[in-house]
Length: 640
Image (cartoon, rainbow, N blue to C red; front, top):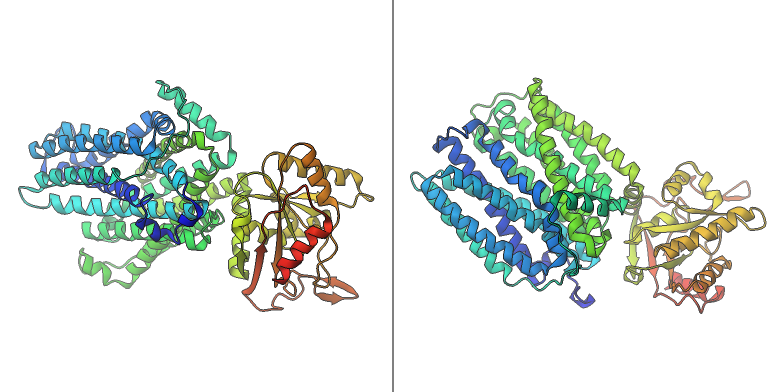
């Protein structure tokens, strides 16, 4: 892991650093080579070479199936290798394999040897299977948490641009009369050699589990990997969410030729344009994740992406109905039709939302998966992705076989996406909570955090903050890169929307000891359990929301928790925090009605997008504190 001063200022700055640039070049060249080779082979079988056992109509399907097969067969083994051995050495070994495969493929293209080329498709699928777990396990070993989203965004953007350029180059090279196939072979070999040269500069990445015993049974190992992933339900359900994105994307990618021909009345150039729009949109969404998430792994973007995927897919269906016939099938005629621009806008926006959806999920899996098992969990994800892509082909084929049009297939996919997303988000409420926090801090307030690096990246800690409004907990949730559990006044759970939200967040209700001693004791036990699990606990020591904007006296409950944690041998630091400029907002108790201080009665009291902030102080040792010391620390931050 790099030291803090090496942290990149943004995702593009990573391209100038050795810990990322050679790795990025290697994966980009590999993805481009995969797709150039596959698409060129498909064009060869479709238009130039007649092979009785591989007819043109099904050539693309068979090539895709052969390429995906190794993901199902060998993903478990590739995950073991990535956890056991140095990842840089594995990448170089995989690139050596690619050079050998492309040398065979070059000979096969020169001889028009379809059988050999199909075998090379399988071997390139094996190459990608071996590279997949290494690729995603490499990033968290070299990037800070604040860089992880940007790094994944660059990887996703680079991968899809490489796919796009590889397909375009494969088609253009195969169009060269007489020598096209031979040129494809030489270009594939050159790309493999360039990838191997780039891999030479990838820095060493020590194994995470060098003592791992390799299993020769892929079925048993696959089941073991799935069980490892299932050990962390947030991670496992994120894997399912990622695999669903591949299902969703595969439906569109597989139907572009038919959509261009049957619905848009265009030729292969129009189909290529759809691929370009889709790839650029996905890349743009992937790159946006870093800035929208303020350089953190912001899973609140996932529901936003899912919502956009469905909305723009449904609008694509309506935009595709009764399109006027163009004056010709070419690209120029297609672009001359105003109605076609709505189709392209929907396609670009739904793919952009797919980028917002997928990148935070990938980053979350990398961040939350146990390091010693990370590559095997990613390998399990690769296998699930392959199965979901096969399922998407079956899904689309069945609907088309029933006489459905391509736009109706898109519509069905968008509607099913709503159901799948709702299922995942209800199973993992953290996504919805972070989405609510993201909306509040981007669309209601302009929220700025100072000193967020002081929040411990791992281990237990108590966050202590002033209590100004009913949404203070949501703001703290948005500021922390880790999940936070809150100890909160039981009265707040009676507020309809906020009560549901805090129950979803597993907030701990606490009541005055003299009135409800059982609730009081249960709250402290749950708070201690949170710290024992190594999680973050947030407390508002004033005990209630301020009624005059001033910091109230701190109650001793927080000290009791720290004392009990210390008695159990837990070293729990305390992080002081102060919310600023929240007093006077809609959610604070500034209004006086019938002699009572009330909140949430004048929505536009301070207009929209007010600047509010959170200042985070340096952690304090939990065993040497008093209520006054804590209050003074928070007061200094509030007045800074």
